[in-house]
Every structure is written in C-alpha cells, then in structure tokens.
Image (cartoon, rainbow, N blue to C red; front, side, top):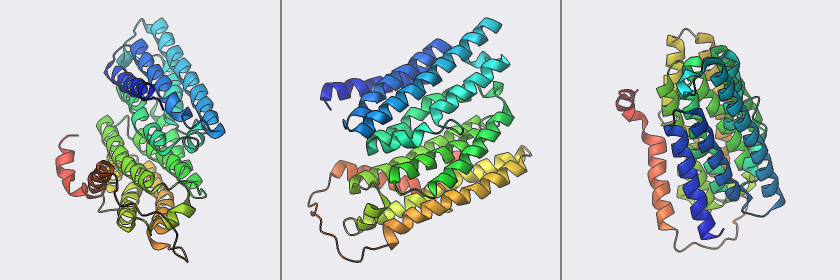
Length: 346
C-alpha cells in the first residue's frame, strides 16, 4: 500500500475511534463510526484478490446498514424526547433499533454472518484490527446507553453468540474463521454482563484484545493461515509455538492463565444478580470454545509432521515484532496473580 494512503487510513482510524468514544452527541458518535468504516476499507481491499474485494463489499454494506439504523434510532429518539444526548436514550423503539445496529457492528448473533467471511478475506493484520480496535467504539456506545437497553434481549443475544461461536468454530480448518467465531463467542460474554457491570465488560474487552493480539501476531510471524500449515510451523519456531499454545489456552479461559479472570468475574457477577441459570449456560458453552482452542493447541505443538519440512532459515528475526510478541505473551498468560489489583479498579 502507498505509504501516504497507509498514513491517512491509520490516522483516520485513530480519529474515528477517538471521536466516537469521547462524544456525547449522537451525530458525532455516528460520524466517528463512519470515519472508521471508510478508513478500514483500504486495508481490507489491499491484496487486490477477488476474495478481498468480496470481503470489502460485504463489510461496507453491513456497516452502512448498521450506521443508517443507528442514525434512524437516534433521530426517532430525538423526535420523541427532544434529546440528542447519547445517555438520554429513552424511547423503546429507539433502544431496540440501537441494539440491532450495534449488534451488526459487533457481529453478534443473529447479525454475525458477515464477520467470519470478512476476516477470511482479509490479511492477518487487518483481521486483528477488525477483531479488536474496531469493536471499541460500538462497545463504548453500548456502555453509555446500558441503562436504557432491554436486558432480556441482550441476554438472549449473548447466550446465542456464545453458543454459535462455540459450535461453528468446531468444524473450521481456516485459522482466521476459527478466530472470528472465537470473537463472536467472547462478544457474548461481554454483552451478557453489560447492563449489570459495564466496567467488567470493558475489562473483558481489554483482556480479550490483549490475548487476541498475541495470537494474531504470533500466527503472522509464523505465516500460518490453515491448520495444515500450523502443524509444520513447529519445526521452524518451536519456542514461539509453545508460547502460542499457552496463549490459546488463556483465550479458552483455563486457570491459572489470564483468560480465566474475566470469565470468573462474569460468572460471579451473574450469580450475584440471581441469574444462576444464565451463568451455568455460559460456563457450559465455554467448553465448546475450550474444545477448539485445545484443537489449535494440539495442532501447533503436539502434532508433528511425519517428515521434516524444507524451509528457509531466518537468521535475523524482526527484533521489534519478537520483543512485542514476547511482552504480549507474558501479559496474556501471567496476569491472573494481579487480579486483586485489577479488582480495585472495577
């Protein structure tokens, strides 16, 4: 990509995110989301491959529909109440329309169909941006309007997302699709606790971003796109694959790794809110996710190809990336002992 285009797109992404998360007015929040959508399109379409172009068109159409719904929701609320403030969303129809619009932006069930396809058509770094950075503005809007949203609707969508993310991830062979369904499943965990403890939603999002960034950067370093190539990457970078296994198990939520912390806190909070059934269902559904993360971990470290693969030795690895991956892996696996300190911020 042209360096100038790259710079403009990156700055636009930062600008759009900043505008949305810092605005109180609906039109400004909508503007930030639109800037984000337009800024990521060059990144998705960069490979000039039919699948990348298809992913770009799907992404644009879904985001444009979601933005139109969000604008319609805020206008109908302003028409009924005379308020353009984000926190003053009180009209019932507007609340449902907003929930639908943000669900489309986040890829929550039943508006999830576009997300795995778009990730599959994107490069690893673009898929990382779509899974993490571009989900912050919609989550911020959900948190700001959490008092007005329908708890039954959100809980239903959250449980459906956790279930579908787990079931659909079982049968995939493409790494990006597996991580897309993993993202849908994690979004379910964030949304189910949103109304009762918004700070916990943010904490879950931050830890999810940390772990997913580690996984994507590791897979990008080893140039792994399918399960079949994952089997052969052990011979190239054994240490990196060993740490990848730890990060995947952390993403699955196994103690004593970092990923256990948000799930533990969410189940605890749901039990406090007398939602024991929802907490039990979510805990059971996380076993589905655990299965396909274990499958990935098994492929990356335990399965060795029957013969040695020919590959070019990397005498000089990219030191910046290596350092970043090392730091992120440490954080993605070893933060659980700091949970008392993290709990004081909630």
